[in-house]
Image (cartoon, one colour):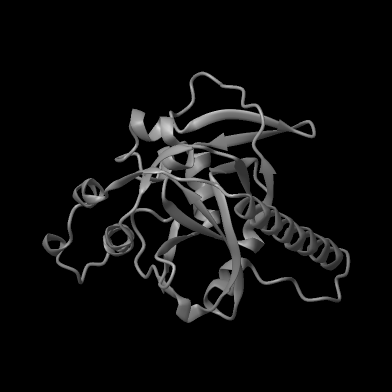
Length: 243
């Protein structure tokens, strides 16, 4: 299967670090390569094959993640019906205090991670019905058990600078990752794994400003940790990652 994906991990790490630090007033912006320049440096590979073993691993990840999501929902429902039990901490608290599990997935060579506590489920991609008058990153609506799910072209939303006809044709979206209790879902090509992270595993975003959806950079994995609450707020306003 022919695909065109980012290949240079060093450049990708520079790209994510630049995004993470662009609002830091203590940094000299002249020392940071522009995002567009960094993206231009990223070479492309032309082939990627999926083995049967990879498919089995993906099924295992999907099953494991959805089981954790179901367990969390059951726990929250139980707590909401029992006033004697303290409320559950938000996943924002778990970001900075203690361990939390995150799902890693790939989009056009970029790896993203989302805390499991902020996921609403993962679905196999089905038919998408287009809707006119929406932002170009809005793919349309997918029906799932009579529920209308809003489908986001993740590559187009996250990195519009790189999105062109070649990249669009190379994408092979297979999954829809739902964000919390919202109707919004991110398209994903591959599910990588669900991993337990600690506070020290992440280089956290310390300055507010642009790209509030970027919670931090996971050091060893060289990937972005998504702040789902902020991402949903941007989507509700019709904004992409650059706004």
